[in-house]
Structure formats: structure tokens, C-alpha cells
Image (cartoon, rainbow, N blue to C red; front, side, top):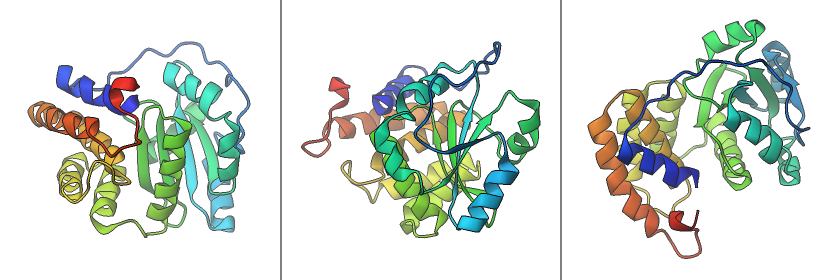
Length: 233
């Protein structure tokens, strides 16, 4: 599971995200069930303002295997068709020169990244880094809609806002406060742990990252009944 992998990665090495050499661009692997707008932020922004719904932006690269896997096996899942009207769906190939202004406005540190963008303020309301399952995405869609609408729970919403703005040092502290109020079975717990790990890694606070991962992993293993254990992932 993605959650377990992040925890173990932090314990083992607290590795930072490194750049990769791009290869020859290739088309998306399979048709998506979602109505993506490809590489056109202006059009997506116009549609989002007209329909009064947020933008869901997929930032990907042709050389990114996780990006291609998401496109081939996750965004093609028919279960996601129920979310088609929830966002304006924007796909950004970060290797294309035409998308440089978008990347400057919404910087990316790891691939793939998924942003929920408030069209009124043109700011990121919520961010997801890395691959995800259909179930994880649908939870993120729910959280993203609430965050863009300003209805997120106060402590977690504050942390999410800082994380979305790239204020990783402040976000790490805010997530620590939010997690103190959450149990391992609470909605948002796993996402908050992942986001805090990423924030600590990004700010090179490796010692705290490792300590936090070691403390969080046992709690994850003893989550509420009925939830999958990372040992079975």
C-alpha cells in the first residue's frame, strides 16, 4: 500500500524526491472515464468559473511510470465516472513548453501530483502527491471539494492550506496539531500522516521524519477493525 511504502521509505532513508531524465513523450496509455482538458489551464479556469466548481489538475510526465500507471489503470476505472461532474478535469504534461506558465504558478516537487484548485482565487486548496487507488482518490475528491468550498475541519483545513501553498515547514507543524486530535481510524488520518511525512522530507528534517514515521507505523497497524492492514498490502 502507498501509505505503508511512504512510512517505510521514511524509516529507511528519509529520501528526498530526485529529478529524472525525461524520455521521448508518448500519448496516454488508455482512455479515461473523466472528461479531461489537456494542457489548457485558461480553458479549464473559464469552465470552472462558469460552472462554479473547482479544478482537479493532474500534473504528470511521460517518463513517470506511476503517472502512466494511474492513467492506464486508475483513471480508466468506471467507478470514477460518478465523480465526472465534481470538478473541471485538467491534465498537465509538465514536459511541454506551453505549460511552463502553469508550472511557474503551481510548482511541482514530485510526480505525479494532483491539485484541487479554487478557480476564484487561483490557489491550490488541496494537494495529493504520488499514486493512489480508486478508493483513495474518491476520498481525496471529497476532501478537495470541501477544502475548495472552505468547509474543511479547522485544524486539518489549516494544515491542508499550508501544504497546498508549499509552506512545508509550517504545514508539518500544523499536521502534528491536527493528528493529535485524530485517531488512526478517523477520516483524513492517513492523508495527514502522508502529508506530514512529505513536508518533513521536503524541508530535510530527516531526524523528525524518521521519528514520526516510527511512531505512526504502529498506530497504522492497529487501525480500527475492518480496515486493511499494511502487512496485507
